[in-house]
Length: 259
Ligand code: NAP
Image (cartoon, rainbow, N blue to C red; front, top):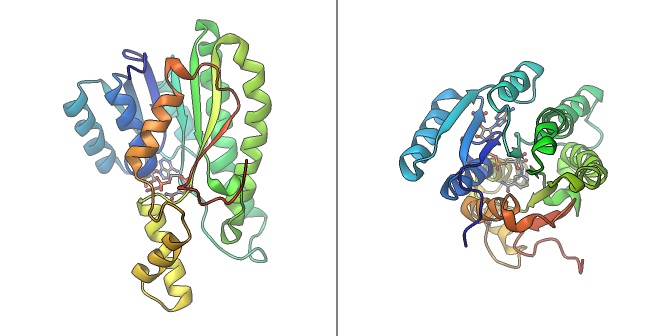
């Protein structure tokens, strides 16, 4: 399917690896020029060069922590005038509900709620002026069904989801759509780190922790970054103009719910 976005320009935050990279890859395949971001310059430059070589698109890189005001300023300056914004950042650490203090919540809110909101506020107005834009926020299945050890994530992402629900309905009349893409378990460094934590706590191997987790997923496996990226690219396509304020769950059936 031709996604109809060849020649458009996108900012994909936190995209040197994992789900962000999957989104950048799928957009590049659709002919979209990119601004890619991550903290580590080496992996970021390698990923960017790979996409330039494979898809012939222009890729600019911004090595910065997107959750800081300085990082946001650098990313926004490079991404001025983009048609597509994919919001992403690392997820908060796991823990116990009774351990988290105010500073832990502030850090999680900064990273997973206030950063995407800041980028939306900076980059959506020119999209409105041009009458076309797409925003996809990478959130989590934890918005639909809480993951107890990820309480910081549950909280911050619920806040972003509420903001998007209202804002998407305010900007839709200008041809700009804002939606959230909710990953269940995907095969990335993040899930490997979470499995390692579970294994340590339970006194089992990471492989056993992974197998036990996957046994609970109806699809019987983790998702891939390519599957995730293809869904993101569709949400950024011409065909998705009537999708407004939605939460698209990609979880292999893991959230046991009818709706
Ligand atoms: P990942 O494999 O750890 O990749 C994270 C990517 O983001 C890397 O490129 C990393 O590069 C970059 N990054 C992290 N923090 C950043 C920051 N502050 N500023 C700029 N770039 C940053 O993670 P992932 O699995 O793709 O997860 C992406 C998001 O989806 C996370 O918020 C995660 O919590 C959420 N999620 C993932 C899953 C899953 O199963 N994988 C499930 C639910 C939700 P640098 O380290 O060099 O910055």
